[in-house]
Length: 413
Image 1 (cartoon, helix red, strand yellow):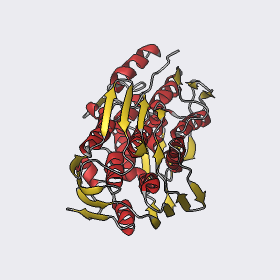
Image 2 (image 1 turned 135 degrees about the vertical axis):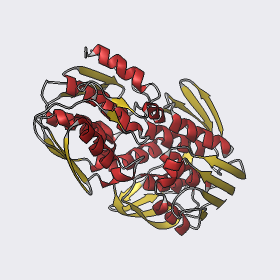
Image 3 (image 1 turned 45 degrees about the vertical axis):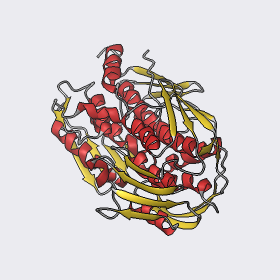
Image 4 (image 1 turned 45 degrees about the horizontal axis):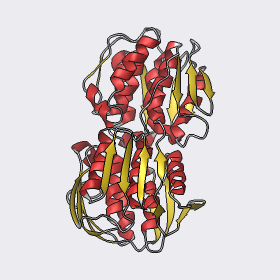
């Protein structure tokens, strides 16, 4: 039975880096994810003047509750959405001039709801080219705090950035949210803030964050649940069995909920204290599922949907259109290339299993790690699948192709 060692969670590593940088004292992060995104975040902290010591199994960060040590910095955020959204927010707590830019892909992704909220809080922030996009400059003078309204309908990261900011403001924050996707990611943020000594209160659509700062701690990073999903899906689709240790009862990440989708389709699932096991039963049933809260796993489900006995309809995933690429259309286009019948709408995709088997083709990745990793699962059942840009997996899992090749051998296909 393959036991798969999944790298640390990208979303947890990014939040932990922000919290560690903001906390009073030295924080040790155990088993952080080492990938293009998280290395970019750590490098951005170093550019802002934070001391970050990196060894293979642990990163140590000297926190600065008063904000960046540098009074001027140029920060390149690479492809990382958390880097591009969290670091300007952190920089606003200091005193100085901080310029941020990002890759062409990240420049296209929206920022406006967050930067509008920061401006409402008195932050002097200027978009240099397209309004609501990188590059941008923050003229920081600390943040007073108070009340702010936020539209988090495109990304929960906007709310996470403001929640993380709250304890660093002079008065704390009262954040009214008008729309919210990916709620489990906000719950991760609140749980992690608690580990660093801050209690957030929620009253309906209002989040109340007290001032007073964070305390340094030692924090262990959970394996990445979205990444684990590809391996769980592999078990479901081949009739094999996969166990991921360290990701079980009490896991912070909502994306572990993907195994419940696999259970509904007919896979056998065990979630224990020490980890989670998925075993394929040789059958996958069709289903209709709302994936608003676990939308990063939408491509994984789309990639195995053609092997179901009936249609698979995935609903309420409009926000997947503003990720690294338009994931909804990317999945539909690649499935059609393989010979699947697919219909899409503004916020849904439906895959209908056909009479003819799928045939191999080159998958167009759009530079998106999740498209490549998802269709690698399809490749377990369809010979001849290749990728135009296999290396883009380094964003979250540089060793993915090697780990997946090993899994393929272990499950005997």
